[in-house]
View 1 (cartoon, rainbow, N blue to C red):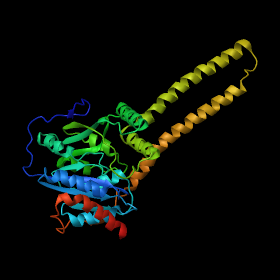
View 2 (spheres, rainbow, N blue to C red; view 1 turned 135 degrees about the vertical axis):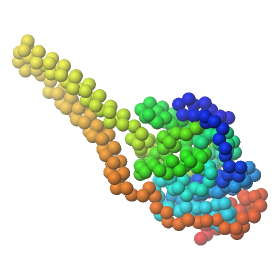
View 3 (cartoon, rainbow, N blue to C red; view 1 turned 180 degrees about the vertical axis):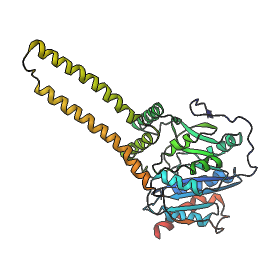
View 4 (cartoon, one colour; view 1 turned 120 degrees about the horizontal axis):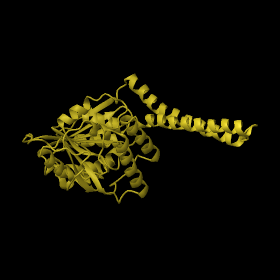
Length: 354
């Protein structure tokens, strides 16, 4: 089911011709997902093998410390459609997504997580909307009952706050799961920033887009790698990357405090001229000093967030470093899919014993 979002959706102006036999790249970043990757590969391959003529499954291992890379290398050996890009260390999910887009070769690229909370069945509908002419087809979560109340509340608050203060609007309740046309991916590749908030970048480039609603299932295996602190930092990265409102607001706060200070000083002068004598108030004076001191520290902290990102940008270090690339071979490529469940368990067992 498609969804209407008047702030982010753009329809194509005229019919668009797509390739008759397109190559679809499926990009999946991984970090310590040894319990998930084999099941994910099995599910995705079963889904797309019957509905997509030509595809590649591109994993990006983001410096995993468990057996994720071993399992991925076995997957690449087992299926010619599977490729693995291994990064030299953990650079973060946004960097891993960037690496995946850089190495994807498809006419359209699907970005998704390996926890199967992004249902692979939607890929077929993504492709249908893409053939209708949309350059970006994103998945919108219309049912998040599997998330905790705190997660739903904070996520909704972030989307609304971000869209209030940023000129770039991102669809609410939308993650990274989406299909992008090759020209959209090519445009994203030209963006040079090191501090990358991919949801914002996906929205910033524009192009015709439409949402597809789905109910978000529970995580199939493994555990999430995002805790409250990482999500908090992720939100700060997004806000500081796409809005200067946190800087501008301190100008307004400073102006209001200056006006209030003027009136307060005037009142003290008038009181002294009319009543005479000293004005008592050591406790209130100390309170004012501590309050305005804390305001100054907060404003310096906000300024520091932007300066720290300038510091990162001017060094011009690469977003990621590739360690190795594992390409698929024909070995075991014709294995029947009905044996995939046993095959997935064998992969995990083999990787654990190496």
